[in-house]
Length: 122
Image (cartoon, rainbow, N blue to C red; front, side, top):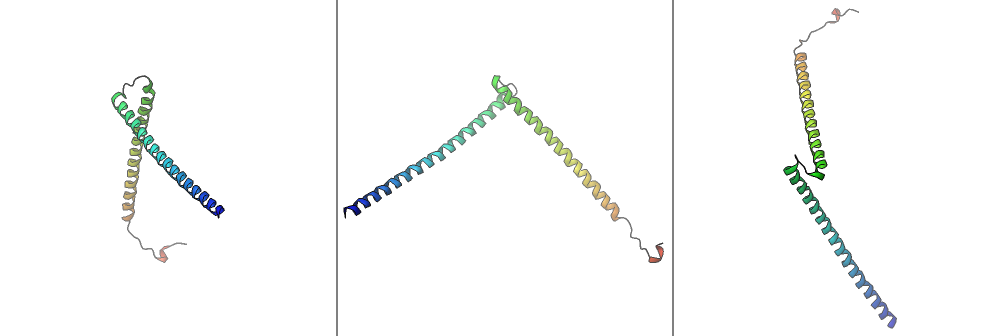
């Protein structure tokens, strides 16, 4: 009987250890999720800080900020050039579509002509 009591105690201890370990792992997971949230908040704050600096000093950046501001200016120039090209392509597309509509109208105005079998030379 002592053996069964001892076995029950060991099973109970293992169960308690398992519950404690589960609680520990759950808390670790919760803290890791919290850390990810905090890292995201830091990333957003850095981005906002950069936006504010660029808005205030982007045209005359100080020292180490000059290269980053130049990259931003170059990217903005590329975006503007791309948008101009997009507008040109859309204008060209509109002209092609208008020309196609005009051609359709011309074809629609051609009168139908009946041809009899005797009019065809072989």
